[in-house]
Amino acid sequence: MRNLFQSAEEEFEIREVFRNSFSPKGYREVNLPVLESYETYESLQSNQSRKSLLKLIDHAGDILVLRPDVTIPLMRELATSSKNLSEELRCWYVQSVFRQSDDHTIPTERRQAGVELFSRQSAVNDAEVIVLACLALTELGLKDFKIELGHAGILQELNRFLHLTEDEQLQVKSFIQMKNSSELASFLIQNNVDKTTRKLLLETAFSYGEPTSVFNRLRETPLNEKMTSIIQHIEKVYERVVALGYGSHVTVDLGMVNDMDYYSGIQFQGFSNTIGKPLLMGGRYDEVSRKFGAQLPAIGFASDVEAIFTAKNNSLKTN
Amino acid sequence: MDPMKIAVAKGRIAEKARELLSEGGISFPDTLYDERKLVISSNDGDFQLLFVKASDVPTYVEKGAADIGIVGKDTIMEDGKDVYELQDLGFGQCQLVVAGFPDSFPEDTKSLTVATKYPAIAKAYFDKAGIRTEISRLNGSIELAPIAGLSDVIVDIVETGSTLRDNGLVVLREIAKVSTRVIVNKASYATKTGNVKKCMELLKKGVDERRADYHNT
Image 1 (cartoon, rainbow over the protein chains, first blue to last red):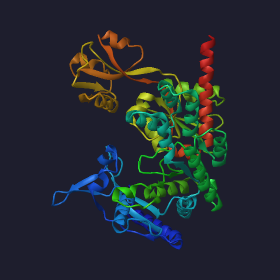
Image 2 (image 1 turned 45 degrees about the vertical axis):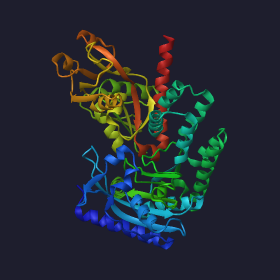
Image 3 (image 1 turned 90 degrees about the horizontal axis):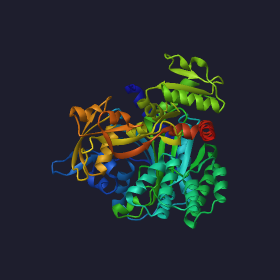
Image 4 (image 1 turned 60 degrees about the horizontal axis):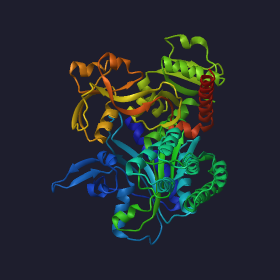
């Protein structure tokens, strides 16, 4: 059990790091309501994640939820006041989020520290947020971390190729998510996908590793226009991250599949060698604001405060 | 470097894993045969085998206490842990099936009682088929359940089917093919990519050589 005082000190520390590192870049802290209307999430989430919502009923009989994330309430809040992106907006937060699970060993309340940049998709904007993630982890004292870089468009493209039923799409998604190349290969054979397409799909879905060598390999792979432009975008983002000094932390993972279905562009995950689960996850979600009747493209990440400090403490123990 | 920690079930899978790695050039001291040992290190110190209960392998790997795990597909499916499944080692082949008396599962079945070691797999399978179920979780002698009247059918793994036959039971539906798989922790994959890939190659090499031997004899 984490010490009560230690937990408060950690929260103070991560706030200080975020404030000191991000304020000079124009980011401001935001606070959001803990209670959110159930309707906000109803249309946005899969069955599974709707089940994880903690619900309560107010005196009028309406269903409320304890916010399961910060991104969506922030978007909803902004969409009520501005329908279009008149200027870029930069925010950060340290807030609790609530999700229930069948597995009772997983705490329902977790603290997230994150960043949102409301801006149009560009290599510069996308790289800005990835660099902030690297900067925060570095300032918090983590050294051997990796940021995996992927793109939501890859899975969408693969699905477009395959003409599968919804059930089969879920199957393909789970094979890719588990990097299970042998079962995906037999699935493609069973579905009469020709050899050239098969090779192409497997090569892209399981491309992983040092960015330059992945990009070089892909240059020899005959990809369609959409796929080529996705990969060029990832490459530009990577180059920008390199220019800002964090290139050594980046790995490319074209088979990255996120359970958050709302990502529409670049997506990323951060790992340390001293903890088994992700430190942070993020990506671009340009379509979310439409559900609230606005056009507010954005990219952000959320880090798991407990995971970050566990990783940090573990690395102090081993050194 | 930190040793690569490989979680394996004691017994047959541990023995196979050690054989595969040693065919790939990683040797272990003979203490593997000491039943009480829980951890052994390879002679070069680069690998560690952790002996755990088969059903605990995915937990060790998901939490990162082990980088890699070697375990049956049935356990992976039942646990649904957030790990990578990088390789099919091809041994330990069997089937995950619905079994019972020949008339226990007619085509138009609407509801069933089920006994199994795999409640999650069973629930997912019958939910998808639109069949209402009452599932009892058992830990052994699953075949007894229909005979004793505990359930209409069982969901279990079968290798040859002889235990089923001896008890007058038959395979009614096949759910999935099972074999031994290699799973990997996501953070280990991201931060120790080279070592994980090396380990996969060693295991793959062992498996391929075995397949070649098998075809030659």
